[in-house]
Length: 244
Length: 267
Image (cartoon, rainbow over all chains, first blue to last red; front, side):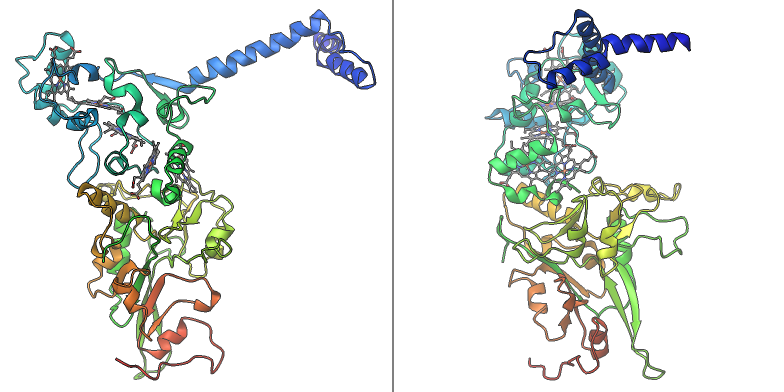
């Protein structure tokens, strides 16, 4: 008890109360800034800096949990016609559509199923390349006929309706506009999921401050609406266009 | 005729009560289509959810003059006046912007994740078309019901209001199909609701009320066409047809002598 009382006295001398008192005196008509003592700054910074660290670094790190993808997938390698042939198309988008196909009814197949990989990786005994990665893929999934449990970076919340065909075919948007360089990467990035909402970090964006420099940095509701508005598509900004 | 993209549509429904046999198929088709939750005790009608509900009405006369009619009731998708002054009553009371009318299609949307469950809209709706989720959605395990759930409809959670959406996902489905076939317009038969499709008596017709080529816009010109509580000025987009005067009279509150029966019908 005693200790507490004395420590509160101390803070009133150097801490907030004294800071406050100085401001009061400043209000009362002193013409220059109150000369904060060194001690006040120590206390101020000792509070400010840790809270900034917690708020901007530790909390965002704690908010997202990292989950490993089941295996790596190399987009750059598969889309390189010198290494992999069979993925044809005049434009890059057309070649992406070799794996990320539209079904006959216009819905988007998304991440390809194992069937698609089997079009080339059909024999687990004879690998197409020489890498251990491919061998692992063949042993673990092709030989066992197991689907690969990919984690989806761009999957929106369940209440969102998104139509790839409206954007890619009718709206003439490139994959890049919304997915950036993803189709040219060699390594899959870490999949991070928000512990509270369960959504992928790519929805909210990786920049904690919320700055957006590219169209693909994040895909929140406002980002969808922003592009619709820019394209004079106000009618697509009704709730029941993007929600279900 | 086909519908052009970017036009103003007014999707609506016409229900022919003379054809309706009260079989209830529309209710079941609707619930199955839209992942509507069931209750362990479905007899508790104050708590069950029925986007499409069938009412039974009688003319109140003694045998042998008794007449019965059945009344399917979806959400009426009340219209706006286009100038922003007049909104459907549920929309104007919503404190969370969770329900809105789409100016382009006339469909009144309900976004469950946005809804805070205050139930003002339920109180404001003169048709009782809105339902509150008192519990989390429930689909009895072991009966295979969960295998019938549709991924096209997002599930509801405890504490939100839900209602008929005119099977809005079917509109999106029809558009997607059209885009795949290099069209940007959809035809009349491509977008219809689950209840209209299921009705064995074909009493329900669905289409664009703005489009003179659509069957609904012709049917509503009938002298027997009426809407529920029309004089509240809610502008419902669900029309009914009945040749029976007493049925039409029941659709609104009339002072004695105010109701005008249809006398002269041409054609």
